[in-house]
Length: 98
Image (cartoon, rainbow, N blue to C red; front, side, top):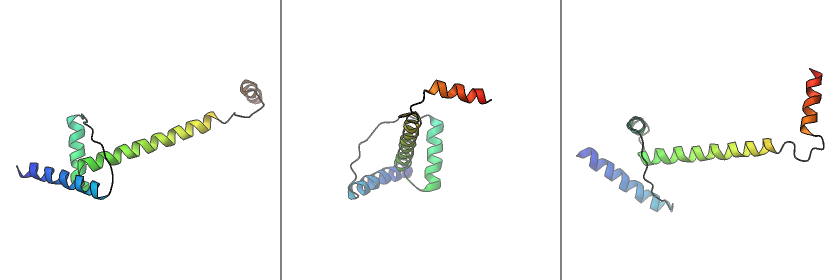
């Protein structure tokens, strides 16, 4: 019973701190495997943070990586932009040098 009340108290504290920080947040329902929940709970104890905070961090990091990947892809796709030479011709020249 103590564990349940402690979890509820942590959630209430987290909501209060979020409101005090002026952060508007939505809520989502997330289904995770038992193994992932266990690993998340282990990390929660290790880092002394609520699961919600750990999940927020993970989602933010994931979205940042996606943004960087999209930027990298966009840059790579734009390498030939503005080049006069045909890409296939350029390939042929390079292969002739082999």
